[in-house]
Amino acid sequence: MIDYEQIAKSAAIFKGLSLDEKNDLLKDGKIRYLNKKEFLFRHGDPLLNFYIVCFGSIQLFRNNADGGEKTSNILTARDIICGEKIHQPCGRHQFNAVAVGDAVVIEFPKIWLKESAKKYSEFALNLVAEISNQASMAELEAEHQAAMSATQLVACFLQKLCLIHDFDPRGFELPYSKKLIASRLGMELETFSRTLPKLKECRIDVLGSHVAISGSGAIEENVCSHCSIEEDCHIHESFKKKF
Amino acid sequence: MIDYEQIAKSAAIFKGLSLDEKNDLLKDGKIRYLNKKEFLFRHGDPLLNFYIVCFGSIQLFRNNADGGEKTSNILTARDIICGEKIHQPCGRHQFNAVAVGDAVVIEFPKIWLKESAKKYSEFALNLVAEISNQASMAELEAEHQAAMSATQLVACFLQKLCLIHDFDPRGFELPYSKKLIASRLGMELETFSRTLPKLKECRIDVLGSHVAISGSGAIEENVCSHCSIEEDCHIHESFKKKF
DNA sequence: CGACACTTTGAAGACGATCAACGCCGGTGG
DNA sequence: CCACCGGCGTTGATCGTCTTCAAAGTGTCG
Image 1 (cartoon, rainbow over the protein chains, first blue to last red):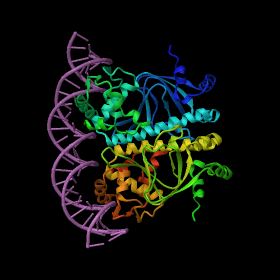
Image 2: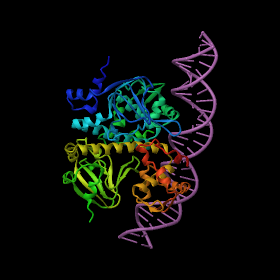
Image 3: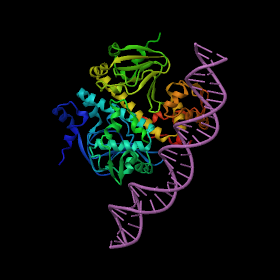
Image 4: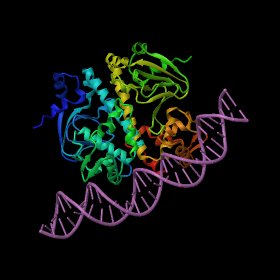
C-alpha cells in the first residue's frame, strides 16, 4: 500500500513547514482514486476544490471550437491543480481534468487554500512561488510554440521527458500515447508522426514507442526546461540551428 | 503636476488596504521618470526591483534568436512589473523593459514585496490574485495564438484596445506603432499590414493609424478579454465564423 | 535636402493542417 | 475461433496561411 499522503507532503507547496504543520494541513484533504479516463472535473463544472496529484498523470485540456482538444498540461505526482484559482470566490472550471491512467489525488475544499495561506505565511509564499513559476512556464512555452518548429518542439519535449521522469536516455518507452503528446505540443498527430524520422538528425531514434537519445551530454545542454530559470538561453541556439 | 503616487494607490495590488497602510507601503518607493525608448532594465540585468507603472506604456520583450524581438506585453498605468519574481532570491531579468513613450514608474527594492506580503496578508492575497490573473491571461493568450488566424487576432486586439483605453469606437488613433502591435500579436509587420483591409468585412476600418469600429454593440460581444473570467466561450464562436 | 524609420504591396517559399487511405492491434460478440 | 469494429498510428497529396525577401511609398527630423 502506497502512502499517498507521504507523497503529498513532499510537494513544493509544503516546503519549509514542519511535519506537524503538514499534518495539520493535510487533515482536511480527502484522497480520491481515479480510474483510467475518469474525469476529475469538466469544463463548466463549479470550481470547488484544490488538488494535489499523488500518483499517475492528470491531463488538463480544453475543447477546441472545431471538436479537437488542446492539452494545456499533463500533471504528475506532487503537482497542484487549481492553485491559481485561490482568489476566485466562486466560478466554473475553464478546462477539463481527466486521469490518463489510474491516478490518485488529494482533494481540498477551496477555502482551505486561503485559510492555509493566512495560517502559515510560509505556505502563502510557497503558493505564490508555485503560481508564478507556473506563469513563467506558460509564458516561456508560448514563446517556444511561436519560435520553434514542430521538430524542435518534439525534440525538446522528449529530452525534457527524459529528465523529468528520470528515464535512461539510451532507451525508454513513451509514457503517454502519441496522440496525447501531439495534443500537448499543440500539433496534429500527423505532424507529430512526421517529425519522428527527422529527429534522427539530432540523434534521437524513435521506433514505435521506444525512444533512444544518443550523445548523452547533449541532453542537459539542449533541453529547454532549464532555460526558464537562470540561463540566458531561452531558446538554445546551437540546438535551433540543427533544423 | 500629476500625483503619481495617487495613481499607484489605485492599483489592484493595494485593494482593500486603508490609506494609512497604502502610505506606509508607498514610502519605500522611488519615482522614476523614463524618457521615450529608455530602458527600465534589460535582459540579463540583475533582478533587483519591483515596479508599478504610473504613466505611459512599458514594453516587455525578448530578443529572438534571429534578431527580431517578441513583445510579451505592453503595460500601462497601475500595472505591476516583476511581481511574479517575488520568490526568486536573486537572479537576472528574463526580458527587456523599455518605455514606449515618456513614462513614469515607482520602483521598490525586491525585499519590499516579500516584507509587504508578510506585513499585510491582504496585500499578499492581492499579489497572488494579480499573479494568477497574469498566468491565466498568458495561458488564454497562448491558446488564442494557436487557434485564431492573424486577422482574428488583430480584430480582437483592436476591440480590446478600445475597451481598455476607453476610446470612442467610432474613431480613434492607434496608441502604438504598427510595428509594436504586430510584435505584441506575435506576427510580422507585413502580416499585420495585410490583415487591415480584411477587417472591413467585420466593420473595422483602418486608415493609417485611424481606426473606426462600426456596429457598436458588437464590441462587447466579440472581444475576447471577457472570456477568460467566467464565460464558457474562450473563443467566441460567432466571431470566429466571420473569417 | 537627405537620412532614416515606418508602412504598404508583391511574389515566392516553407510549414503545418486537413483529407484520405491503409496497416496494426485489442476487444467484443457471434 | 473468427469476423468485425474502433482507436491508434503512419504515409501520401493537397491546400491555406504566414514568413521571408524585395521594392517602393510615406513620413518626420536634423
